[in-house]
Image (cartoon, rainbow, N blue to C red; front, side, top):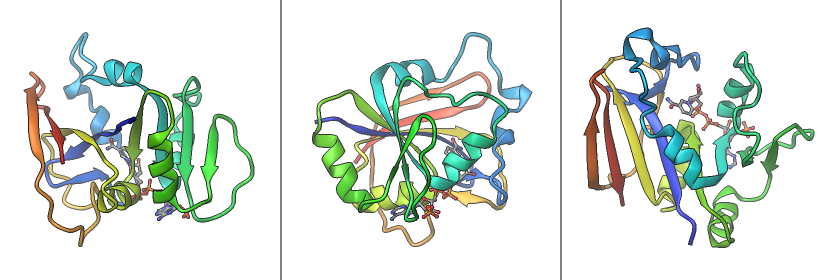
Length: 175
Ligand SMILES: NC(=O)c1ccc[n+]([C@@H]2O[C@H](COP(=O)([O-])OP(=O)(O)OC[C@H]3O[C@@H](n4cnc5c(N)ncnc54)[C@H](OP(=O)(O)O)[C@@H]3O)[C@@H](O)[C@H]2O)c1
């Protein structure tokens, strides 16, 4: 069965974006390490499909660059109808039923890009198989949480942890 992998970066206080959706703190100059991509290239090799919430899709569209995953099948979860758009398919059916069926289909793994709302939805439904969480040594104080407040407590097993010279710490976990 295909695995859903949540590969995402978070602040120390558990935010994936500032309250206005800004993620520029992730791309601060001080964090760049020559020749290091924090496992991103390997992740892209291992997947053929992405999943994202509509708000994350809007943020990606706002970046000043072409759509970043044109060679993948990209699904955007939304409760509202949307006109066809390049590179993505909008999922209008029940999102957890859709993802459960997607996992049963042939193919490579599935990258759950985020954001917080869809992370929470799929976590609660037990549909996330792997967590690769990169902790960035910054406290934002407020923002969009990795998982929404009120998410039920859950213990994860750490398979591996990696630390990087720029202060990033990455935990590889599974339920
Ligand atoms: N740090 C990182 O690495 C990282 C990675 C990814 C994203 N982000 C950030 O995360 C932020 C967005 O996170 P977010 O939590 O605000 O939003 P989100 O999870 O990206 O998207 C929320 C939207 O998903 C749809 N949705 C939510 N629950 C649903 C359900 N049960 N069924 C179907 N559709 C559902 C709804 O779309 P409709 O309103 O259209 O119904 C909802 O508005 C952005 O700022 C992005 O930059 C950061």
